[in-house]
Image 1 (cartoon, rainbow, N blue to C red):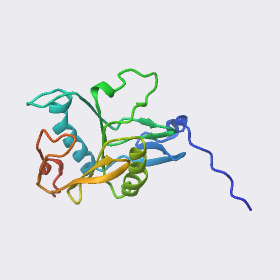
Image 2 (image 1 turned 120 degrees about the horizontal axis):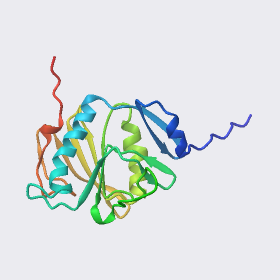
Image 3 (image 1 turned 180 degrees about the vertical axis):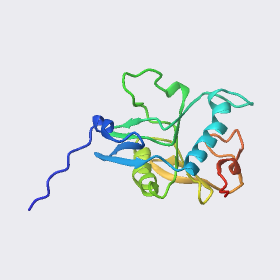
Image 4 (image 1 turned 90 degrees about the vertical axis):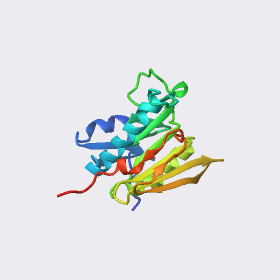
Length: 190
């Protein structure tokens, strides 16, 4: 017996998920994941706090010229992705759109890995970011305490750096500042 064709997910399907979940549409499938752990959120928030002042606001000797957002909806073709952090050079960012999603692929994306989203982030989403011309992709693992920096070259992802634990990173496209990775890790205490 032939298998029934799956209905392709539509944007309106995102309204049907529980409030404590995150929804994305990838390859026509509605993917629903629980809100991230405190280690995940801490790493993403801390990184946003490191990058925002110098790159979004030009403070502390930073160059400015970026828009950096946390958990924004980005439409890439028929896919709706929600990266942990995304950054656009100001001149590329659409400041007004009629939709909730942003229609222009970012220049930089950061995904914070969780056991439940690791394959999604490293396989499906990474492929889509590359296909849509995202130039820089960071993967942060708050449990292993690592930062992988990857750049898109001629349509292929290439390693641009790997940093661990308390390294001081100057990582593209934000190499003008030094990021103390120890600030990204929430310590486990009893």
